[in-house]
Length: 316
Ligand code: HEC
Ligand SMILES: [Cu+2]
Image (cartoon, rainbow, N blue to C red; front, top):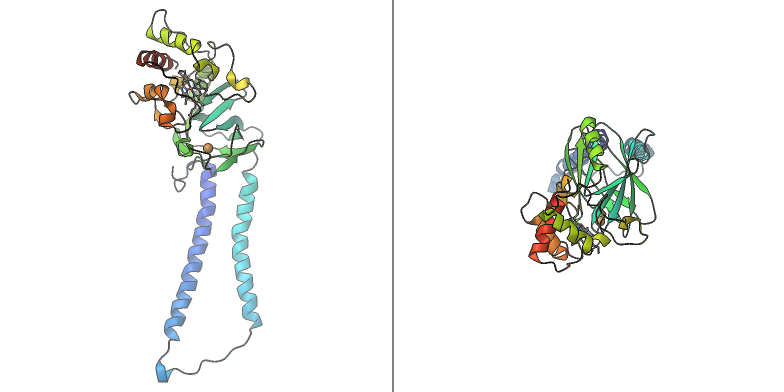
């Protein structure tokens, strides 16, 4: 998460603005401090030998000069800044649209043209302008992927947008940039940029319904627990659950789990799916891992947890 290591054209453009300002400020610093040092040494008090300085009162030409120069300096920063502000507050017509919905404490991503929803990991193609249509389901959040662009607020009742573009395939880390409650620090984001070909494969996979476990397997037992218990009232699994809680107005719901195991990280991108026991610990007691989590501790037995985890791991 390093905004001084910009990746992609938007972040590099903004970084150019930062550097322009930094260079101008550095030049002014050297000039002003140099002048100050020069005056302090050249005109220091030499006791008896100090000549009486020339007394000056008012100088119209000097005053015009030291007003005009700062105006020009500020204008040289303001003009490109205002230009970028407008440039990055609207998307071009052929941009790829992805919706970002902020929740306490995870980011949901909807791909409206393909009709599926995912969470925590935003997948996008490289060399494509991606337009994030952002909203919040509860309080104010802030979407920030430092290597790809600056921050932008997610505000309840308001639509905001943020542009992302990556040139290199890879992982880019992010973090909610606005204090949003107890587990704000554990509300992270992961962006994965793929080549357009890989992205097309990923899209096709995400549009499939969930795989069904084999009859009599541990995964099958997990699926039954999932459908028979509370899980189903908050999570959608396409092809498995009857309704999608995200579509019920005002409902508290969790991430779509249809392709849960295709994501490297979960629970607000703070837990690693490859980490042994991480998923089991999460199912066992979510508020212990993320204070205040809206996924409750359901008091499951170790056996139930293992079956549920096995089932969730099969959802790739
Ligand atoms: C009251 C609603 C609710 C219930 C019931 C519930 N969950 Fe959740 N679940 C959530 C919320 C909210 C999150 C997101 C928590 C966070 O990241 O802060 C979540 C996150 C998860 C995640 C992580 C998903 C991801 O991609 O980040 C898994 C896995 C999960 N739940 C499984 C289950 C299982 C299994 C059950 C049943 C034993 C269950 N949940 C019951 C609300 C619920
Ligand atoms: Cu937040």
